[in-house]
Length: 336
Image 1 (cartoon, rainbow, N blue to C red):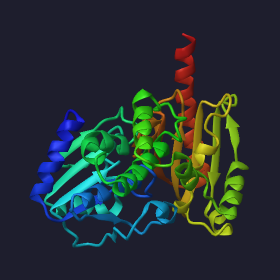
Image 2 (cartoon, rainbow, N blue to C red; image 1 turned 180 degrees about the vertical axis):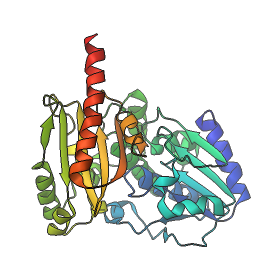
Image 3 (cartoon, rainbow, N blue to C red; image 1 turned 60 degrees about the vertical axis):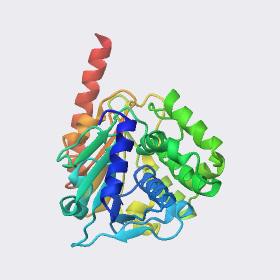
Image 4 (cartoon, rainbow, N blue to C red; image 1 turned 30 degrees about the vertical axis):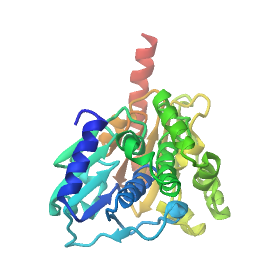
């Protein structure tokens, strides 16, 4: 598909074909994938169309302020739908067991804004716009003509979710993907009746005291490498357990160190289970997606991630080697 007009046409044609509809996003749902899923679910409801959001056994408590009713269905083998819509994800590896749902459904529509990763999902129809700030932004542009005339309560319910999608992936308009287009969409959503201040506070600031203690423990692990241009930090299962937290209940902690003076690469390793770590990479100048891809992950040029197995010290050593090499290439090019 070439543009959001065509995306809308394809979606409408698929909605006429299928009576059972599933929506899903990637594992460890974030404010883009999951909020966009809610927005699409509520949009379909406004048209009298029922849908279900298929999830793993994740913690959705921090999205409770956006949720009305219980549109969530836990994945199990044997589930099948006429239409499956995959949001904010293009790789089978980021669906875990739910990857089996792709082949079990009549049609699959994929809507994403990430650079294609390893094991790209074989969808019947795909719309991937890597220039888009978030999937929520894509949905708004595609469905704007249908969303804006809705009754105020339905409009605000959808707009709230789309706005969370945008502030998640722009880090509240501080990331490099913040541009005129995304600010225009935010302004149009604001004009629909949402309260940006309350949404920001509900999503970014609504932390428990133990969460903040956990943040402090993670920040205390910070190490600086390569002439203080690489910031490395980590967290362990012990830290999570000590603060009565689960890994997926805490927002990615790289946002607490983005923009630190002099830092060109941020690397964060979060222990998910014994000898399994979630790697998060951020950089304003280095293509960290290429590094994440070397571990079987992916994302964006400036923000990417992967799952890495091994012992922490070994992972750290290999990772720093790759980061130093990428940084050396960048500084060499910059100097030339």
